[in-house]
Length: 279
Ligand code: HEC
Ligand code: HEC
Image (cartoon, rainbow, N blue to C red):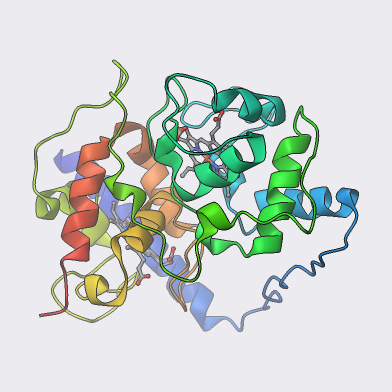
């Protein structure tokens, strides 16, 4: 454990050093990703192409999902177009979608309605980060994976996308009976867990000062549990302003976080962080 900690803190020191160096060199800034230009009357081909960009870009889907090869922690999405149609008929499905496209949208807003066999219910609810046409584009792309594209610019998914009101925290969706291989909950408190997972190496919890990452001491005042969950599961999807991409993800994954953390521990951590109001 001691050696592990030494190695870990050495890594953190190294990262901090690189950050320092990185910040002191004038940045060759990349243009911020442009908002994709979408219009209602775009061709199906263009919707698919844009959807692909979203999948590999701002949607962050490709951080987790492979297409065409087995994924350890997230399912391969090859053939999804056809599979989506069949999902809504399966006994294990407990949502309200009536067809494939609806299922796809629903599973982006409320991933718990169906949990793919042998995987942990750890998909973040990313749907609300996309506007209506971006959603059509993404669904077009997903349908094109082994299925027929049946949506176009006029398709709306009002049923799942609501009107402005924040989507209900799907965090509350009961995890389907965990598969046998699932990691067991540790029973530790949120405070202990953020220590165990090294969060405190980069985040201050007892004051507003930033360190490698933003201070989390008032995160519960600034953000809701949904955001916090996404920030942990898909660190690059929600970027705190002024901080680098990739760092948190690389470190957590390097620690084997996604494979080793139990869903319940994750929930405990999220609840704990959501309770921090900066007092
Ligand atoms: C942090 C990792 C992660 C990210 C990011 C992620 N997913 Fe997932 N996704 C999962 C996991 C794990 C599952 C399997 C468990 C489940 O079904 O909820 C899953 C399941 C799915 C399913 C259900 C597949 C099926 O066969 O029924 C769809 C569809 C899906 N993801 C699409 C997406 C799309 C589109 C994005 C990007 C907007 C995305 N995911 C981003 C982890 C992720
Ligand atoms: C190697 C450093 C590092 C580690 C370890 C790390 N983070 Fe982060 N974290 C960051 C950075 C950098 C950001 C800002 C960039 C971003 O949003 O991804 C961040 C952002 C966040 C945010 C969003 C904060 C905001 O103000 O929007 C949350 C929540 C968070 N981290 C929680 C955690 C938790 C929980 C852990 C442990 C499981 C953890 N982090 C581990 C570096 C780290």
